[in-house]
Amino acid sequence: MNNLNEPPNWNIRPNSRADGGDGSKWNYALLVPMLGLAAFRWIWSRESQKEIEKERQAYYQKTAAFQKDLEAKYHAVISENRRAVAQLSLELEKEQNRTTSYREALISQGRKLMEEKKLLEQERAQVMKEKSQLQPLRGAYLSCLEEQEDWQRRARLMLQEVGEALAERQRIYCSLVLPRRARLELEKKLLVRASIDPIAADLEMAAGLTDIFKRDTYCGDVWNTNKCQNGSLMWLYLKYWDLVVELKKFKSAEKIILEK
Ligand SMILES: *[C@@H]1O[C@H](CO)[C@@H](O)[C@H](O)[C@H]1NC(C)=O
Ligand SMILES: *[C@@H]1O[C@H](CO)[C@@H](O)[C@H](O)[C@H]1NC(C)=O
Image 1: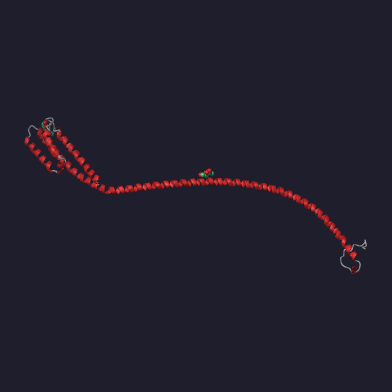
Image 2: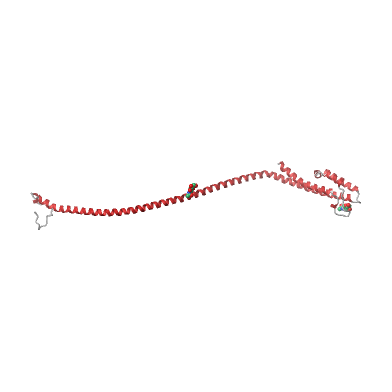
C-alpha cells in the first residue's frame, strides 16, 4: 500500500521486490494516472468535440454565406460577361456587315470601273482603227483639195479674163460708134478659147457664150460709166460659172471619198 504522506510512486522503475508477488502494487500505481489521463482525455475530447462542432457550425455558416455571396457574384459576373459577349458579338456582326457592305461596294465599284475602262479601250481602239483607215483617205482628200485649188485658181483667172472680154464685147455692142466687126472678132476669139481651154470645156462655156451673143441685148444708160449696167445675161452666166467652179471643187473631193 502507498503511504498517504508520501507521494505516490510514479516511478515506473521496476524494483527488485516487485518481481515476487507484489505485481498488483505496480499495476495499481500505474492505473491511477492512466485513469486520470483517460478521463481528461474523454472530457477534453468531448469539450473539444463541442468546440469543434461549434466552430464547424460557425465555419459552415460563414462559408455558406461566403459561398452564397460568391455564387451571387459569380452569377453576376457570368451574366455581365454574357451581356458583354452578346454586345460584342452584335458589334462584331455590325462591323462585319459594314466591312462586308464596304467590300461589296468596293467590288461593285471596281467592277464598274473595269467595265468603263474596257469600254473606253474599245472606243479608243475603234477610234484608232478609224483613224488609221482615214489616214490615207485624209491624205488623198488633202492632195485632191490642193489640186482642186490650183484648178480653181486657174478657172477663176480664166473667168475673170472671159468676163472682161464679155464686158468689152457688151461695150462695143452698146456703143453707137464702135464697129460691129470688132465685136464679132471678139466673139469668135471667145468661142475659140472656150473650145480649146480645158477648164472652159469643163464648164461647157461655149454653149453659154453662144447664148449670150444671141440674147444679151441689154444696154444701160448712154452716159453710164459702170460696165455692170451694160449687159444682163452675161453677168448671170459669169455668176453661174463661178458657182460651178466652186461646186466642182467639192464634187471631186466627194468623189475621192466615195471611191475609197
Ligand atoms: C447583318 O447582315 C445580315 C444579312 O445581310 C442581317 O440579317 C443582320 O441583321 C445584319 N446585322 C446587323 C447587326 O446589322
Ligand atoms: C454702156 O452702154 C452705153 C450705151 O448704151 C455706152 O454709152 C456706155 O459707154 C457703156 N458703158 C460701159 C462702161 O460699157
